[in-house]
Length: 213
Image 1 (tube, rainbow, N blue to C red):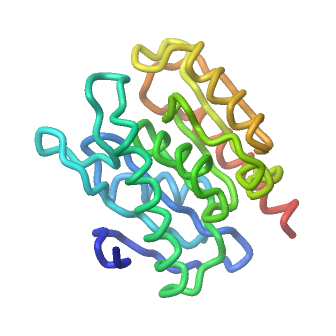
Image 2: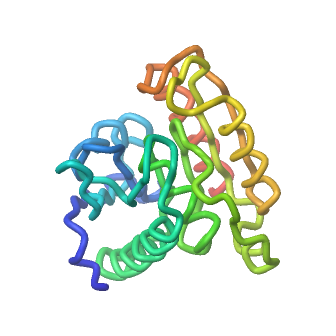
């Protein structure tokens, strides 16, 4: 696996004080989809945006699924580690600090898997409409130590037809138990993003910036 194996976009930082963002699109998106969102929630941050390498009926994704909401968990594990390698190599190429992942739907799910499987790759995560990615995630102490209070913002939709409320609540608990510092908010929205998502994400990452400073 080489860094160039992922088609991606990179925008260098205009504000060196902000953590880089790793932008992870939803099903059918590509490396351009979340650039605007990244600019809105953290103006001036470096943006690293890969395209998922799995195709489902021609639509890019970050891992295979067997049905709606049913994941190929072997592929989740493989693809999360592959993405982690990409981020590590891209950091070297572009001289980046550890990024905060910003994932939507399928992209949020692979970001959650990355937190559980290779947490040292990320500085934190904004998970938009995420589900539990692994039914049997690792529970070993090194994962907990590596997550070590890393900040995670989980934004769910109250009327989301894809992600049941019980599933997003379980993900919040799972990440908390794994050592992350999780903020979980349920918005009056469906699966699509709303202005509230943008506002909450911007405020949250501003607080992360302030604490880091």
